[in-house]
Amino acid sequence: MAAVSLIIPLLSLMVGQEGIAWPDTSTELGRALFLMRTQRVLAGFIVGGTLSCAGAVLQAVLRNPLADPYVLGVSSGGAVGAALAIATGFVNYSAYALPMTAFVAAIVTLAIVYRLASRHGHTSVHGLILSGVVVSTMLSSVLMVTLSFTRNERLHGILWWMLGNLQAGDIRILVGCGVCGLIAFVVSLAMARDLNALTLGREMAHNIGIRTRFAVGCSLAAATLAAASAVALAGLIGFVGLIVPHAVRQLSGPDHRRLIPAVFLAGGAFLVICDTLSRSLIPVREIPVGVITALTGGPFFLFLLRRRRHEWEI
Amino acid sequence: MGNLTPAMSSNTPAIDLKNVTAGYFATPVISDLTLTVTTGERVAIIGPNGAGKSTLFRIITGLIRPTGGTVTLYGQPLLKITAAERARTIAIVSQELESTMPFTAGELVMMGRTAALSRWSPPSREDRRIIAEAMALTETSHLKRRIFQEMSGGERQRVSIAMALAARPRIILLDEPTAHLDMNHRLDTLLLIERLNREQGVTIMMIGHDLNLAAEYFPRMVLLHEGRIVADGSPAQVLTSEILSPVYRCGVTIHPDPATGALRVFPTKL
Picture 1 (cartoon, each protein chain N blue to C red):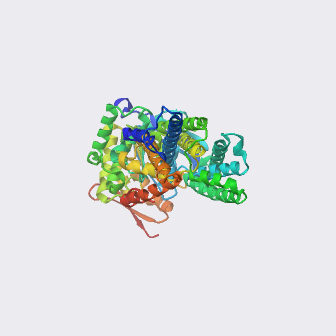
Picture 2: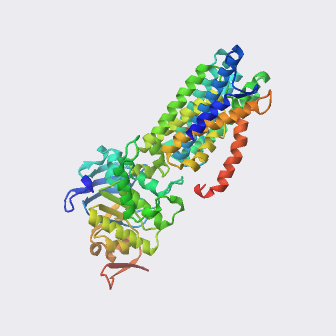
Picture 3: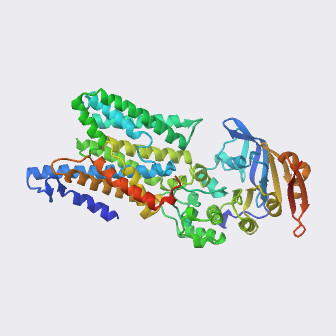
């Protein structure tokens, strides 16, 4: 599986609106094209991998099969941040303005959600999910208000960002977000056995010798870092973080020591495929990659749900 | 049992609670409780719902920090022991083990050994041997590759005990291990617990609702009521209608079993 998920990005380098072939790197245009595609495929792989990894971590920690990287309000926080940056014209100052605003807003939102879910120094899982949902809904309203006050020519930018876009404006953004995503991945991998234990509930995890507060904190931090850097790099790309962990679990089993690396590779490959389709399916126009992930991932998820219903007592 | 085997007749207190007060959010559930359990003992904790039995276990595992008093394990203050060290000493069999994910029995039993494994390296051959032994002892070896969620209540309970054994603990706490089991599986579970105690010297504390089974298999019984110890002693000392009747708020008649001589408790109208 590892081999397959590494070959897919290479193949997708060959595909584009300009036809299917290896770009001719002897010409100026060919080199530019090759560089653009490489960046885009790399961004797709990293974003897909980190989102899926964050999804797997959150599904274990929150003990909820419907958890995804966005469940704790990371997406709506990032979205509001990005929308404000675009609406106010702040984006025009620097290439970093948009990802940085989205990143900071996502982290701040999570801090608020975490604070709301904590009482007497104890953070409950249900509290996290509930306050995440409430904060998300409130932020969506803020987003709507922002949209309705935004001038027409800037609306397109916000919309495109909300649908997800893997063409990073600047290679330094790609590197920055990529490094954050990889750190999150390594931390998740280090927490693998803690995640296994946490699926049994906090009390049982404590009983078998896990420092649960540390484990939950570390895992949530890793998942947030992953989700925030993915949001900053590529906007909102839904479904990847929800379905990839489910699909991979069917193949590798639920043991996180195997699951986390497998999910990272599979998620990366999945998003690269979706993005390749998005930029080559219809000539000249580009379909937003978020639309492709939802349209392919949604039915697949429903199929899995019907087939293995008994595994999840929802 | 390697270096974890305590001397069978040693007098070291395995668990020592002194004047412990604890509860949730400042409401005390356990008040000023003092209890000593000696290595190799088999103690049943009984009492009505809400007496503080499960809270007592949570104090011993360090999940709840007492607001007053001290807890020591083998002479060491609980607060000074790391989570991993504590889990290698005490294992807990909870009422019902539940995972949200389709783990196999083998994977779960391996999780019971978490505290003995390193974060990065896979389990060693020795670890695998210990896990195989734990599964053999609980007659769950054939379930190794089966999905835990798909098993029957009795099978799950045995896997849960195997998980506790995988840590090679010196103490096992069982919280109503027989609550969801049929008659025959209750008996099997208690026989297994007795065997672990006798052959391997594992100190046992069990919360039980079934006073008759507790009386038959446990030489020492501790009766809790409203967070305090009301009676502590042999079944004959604890199971009297004078003691039980006010605690359970019903009439109680007690007869020795004609075949085994073990005490039998029957509730009656007041």
